[in-house]
Length: 137
Image (cartoon, rainbow, N blue to C red; front, side, top):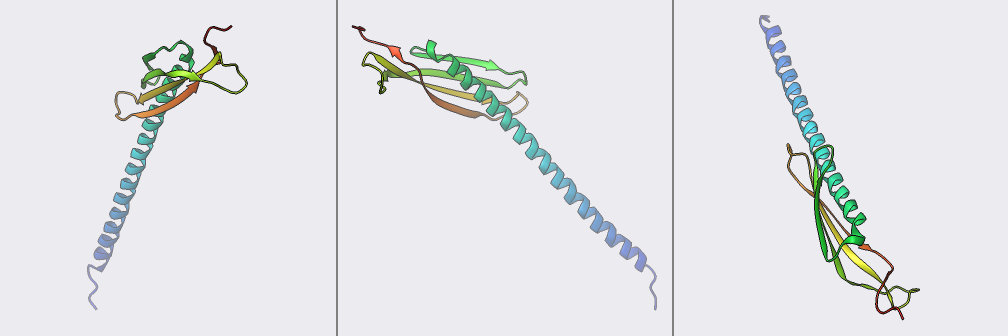
């Protein structure tokens, strides 16, 4: 039998198979890296939005009728926050008619560092009080 060149054919087939496996591995690792970067960007934007919401919640007693602020974090992510009063307040059991609990809406949007794009948002309704109202007779 004439088996000349069969080693070359087998070697080329193995090389093609190994090349295909290598390309597949590179494709998977690139996808995994992109997913990790997107996760980090999303977390950064969410943390910025959360920081803005916490700032707005801390500022709640001073809001009337609305307040807006922007800020940035050490990782260069930023937030934009608005806070506004919702009506005059509600009565709560256990308190007299001269006390109200005002409600405030805090909305914050976080953005990742400038090299990336996307936003995440946080919204909260905050009760504050009791606050004396009326004539207090």
